[in-house]
Length: 159
Image (cartoon, rainbow, N blue to C red; front, side):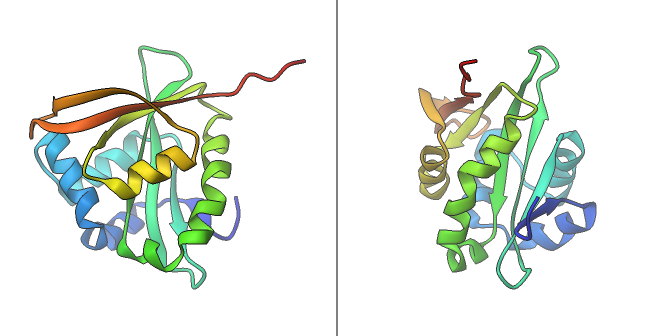
């Protein structure tokens, strides 16, 4: 951990929920048909781990986690939601992104999920962080919107 990332708390959800980027809220609505504080709470409780990202001034920038896949050992659905405060710290955020994704690979060999094709900020971040796009789904989720499927596989280390 560092001063920009810490384990999330349920209190963080109450602070973050009303501040999330509209693109993030719309992505959740398109995928599952609703967006609410209860949705974020479910994501928080289902995740192992779940972290918040902090800005230079200690302000909450976003939240992310991994929901373990009970059917596939060492794999999980990675997710992230950010506030507009992210725009204040673009370089700090990018500098630590790969490190954060690498940290998730301490537990998970495979990280995966879907991203709304309209969510260009997350798509750029995913590429920067080493995720690969493996499929395009033109009618994904409840909203039947275009989504990209993405993965990141733990790098093999030669011994």
